[in-house]
Image (cartoon, rainbow, N blue to C red; front, side, top):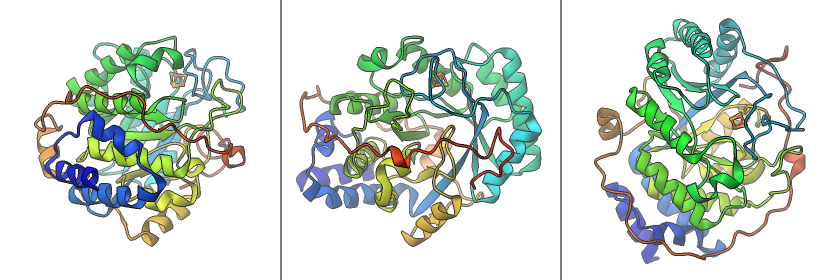
Length: 383
Ligand code: SF4
C-alpha cells in the first residue's frame, strides 16, 4: 500500500505525516490491519528496538475530586464504587513503588486526584519522591498532580522528579464536552510549565469517548506540537457511575489503528499503552507491542489490570524484552536535545472531514474490575 510505504519512510526519517495520511490510517479496513501493524512496527523498531518500558502507577490520593472530567471515576459526583482515600504517607507510597520496581518497572508514576496541588501538596509529594529515590537507585519518577501553578514544576524538579504527566485527553474542539471545570488551554499550560522547568513532559490522550477520527488526529497533532517525550494512549474504561458509562465504542482493531496512527505521528516518542489495555485490546495486546514501546505494569489508578506476571509473560512470548534500568528509553537524538523540536513543523495539510466511522464495540463490563488491592488498602499490590 502506497500510504504505508510513505508512512514508514517518513517515520524512519522522523518526518511528520500529513493529517490526511494520519486519518487514512484510522480509515483502513480490517483486511489491511496486519499490514498497518507491520508498517508501524518497523518505525517502532527503528527507534526503540524490541524494548518495552514498564511503568508503575501509585495512586497517592484517590477519589473525591472537585473537577468534572466525564471519563473519570474520581470526578465530582461519580457514583463509581472506587477506593477513596487521602494522601498516602511517603513511606506507604515508597512501599507501593518498591513492589512495582521489583516487578520490573523502571518508572514510578505518582498520581493524585484533584484540580491541582497546593504548595503543601507539592511539599508532601517532594518528600515522597525523595523517599522513593533514596531507596531505589536509578528509578525514574513522574508526578501527575493536575494543573500546576507557577513555580511548582521547578519545585518538583528540585525534589528529584524526572517527569510530569498531564494529558490533553481529547481535541481542543471537543474538550468542553468532556470537562467544564477547566479548559484545554489550562492543560496545555501545565504541559508547557513542566517542559520549561526541565521535566520530561508526558502527555497523552483518551480514545473511545465518542470522538471522531478528526478529533483523534487533532489531539495527536497537538501533542506532537507540545513535544512530550512520552505519549500515554488510554482507551476509555466506561466506569458504571460516570457520564460515559455507556460509551463502549472501541474494538481491538480500532485500538491497534489508533496506536499505529500515534506511532506514525510521533515516531521517536515513547508511546505507552495506558488504561483500558486489557478491557479493549483483550487478546490482541501482544500485537499492540509492535506499536507501543511502553506499558503500565499491574493495576491502574482505580481499576485492576491483568496480573503483573501475565504482563511479563506476554512481553516475552511476543518476542520483546523488558527495558532495563540501565537502558535509555529515548533514541539518542531525543535524549540529547530533550525533545523532537528539530523534526519539522506540525501543521502540514488542511485536514479532511468524514472518514470511516468507528464501529461500536460490545459492552464488556465483565472486564472492568474496580481496584481493591495495593495502595490505600491492606492487600498486596499487583506487580
Ligand atoms: S482532575 Fe483528574 S482526578 Fe479530577 S476528575 Fe479530572 S481526571 Fe479525574
